[in-house]
Length: 587
Image 1 (spheres, helix red, strand yellow):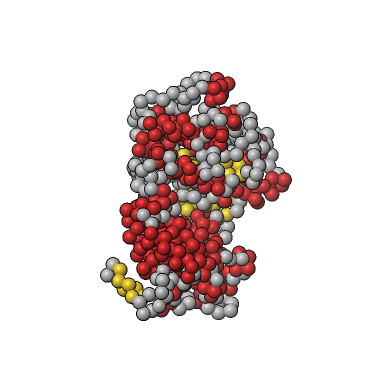
Image 2: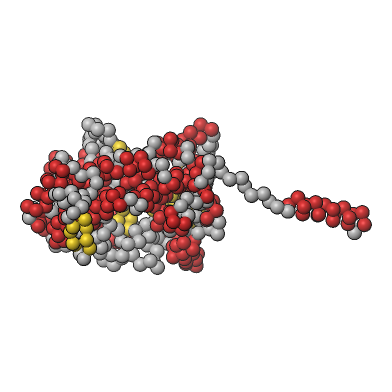
């Protein structure tokens, strides 16, 4: 039995290490561009906007930048936006000098070619970046010149960035849509929309189980990228009347675009005869429950707890900005990626709240549900801040605040503790750790951390997070305190993962088809495009002709005629003649 686990892990680890070697031999065939006339209809169907195509979609962004590279004025706008982004993510000590350089290079008070600036050994003419108004330039220069070094922030360039993007979204974006770069973008969109089936992936070991089925590792045969596949058994869903819950999770995942939530990676959704499948980002580092309780003494050092809490909080802030309350914060739902960054997973209990409304529902996990949820009172986002308090407490103490690990206690007793008891702090807690836990675990929501109008912005300023550089953290540039071993499998042995029993007495029929159609959307744009770039499919295939000329698939008013298969008729005739001769000769 141990041998079965060793084999499963070995095959899985080998696939993880293979990267582009995991591609099918036919991957280029599967990603062959259609003739541009075949994909042109998508322009009208997509109703393209600058923000969607050139800012949010990775391939759209790359192709727009290639278009801008052919025009000095447009290229300068790209340099400006990139340098502002670098300024935002820089260490606080470097921000003043970077801001002053930005102003000198791109926002001179006098917009003239006769003025040159020498910075870092390079000369820059005095021409201002396109799109920025005189008033904005004056305001930015004044702010940068007078600000104390410790107060430099992204707000200094907010108006200039908006005006540059407004400029790019005008005539440059219109011109872009008439070029081969936009036609190539539509070709990629056509490929993105091709059908997804179980044959798109290779399947590996089971990693865990969810409410409606197992979760296993899989690999795209096209790019070689590894994913986690969450299988929802159709009969199990129908028996438990979980159609709305399954569809809700899938639709919420499509709306989320945060590196701190496993959406992101809903990359694909498709159906098989027996299951609905969601293909998600593979988190090779395992869940926080495994690390808290199975990797030495229970709990973490405070530095590690601060890092995870900060990334989880950014995930919550993103969800709340979409009016989504998570409702299932617990260590086993928080997963580590290859580099040691944490993400929120499993949105099965999450729900989107309409503006101005509250909801009610006793949902969550015993011991992590907030007092208002236990009492079945109405709420908005307060339960998630309570969950953050429970998480910080468990990461430091090595147990949840109201229930010891593996403690045998009735649900009613745990709920009484949540409503009435005060959590106990040991000497494992620093004053900052104790403060944030006590503020997040306030039983009255009006006194709870994060519940004010400022929400997450107020929580970011908490002393517990004093060493966090938020722009760097948001950009994924903050170094994690722990990096998973790429040769390790951070999950239970295959045989220790409880298997589902077969579902009997449930019959699937045509009435279920509409639900399946809503679920099986195929590829999801941003994750799919990110996969193409990350796995180098984009760089290998996105080529143009010599000196930036169009390739044959971008030329002409109709697809070229397929080449004729020469010699087939002759050969078949020869074979027939040979057969006839043999028969008549009695051979």
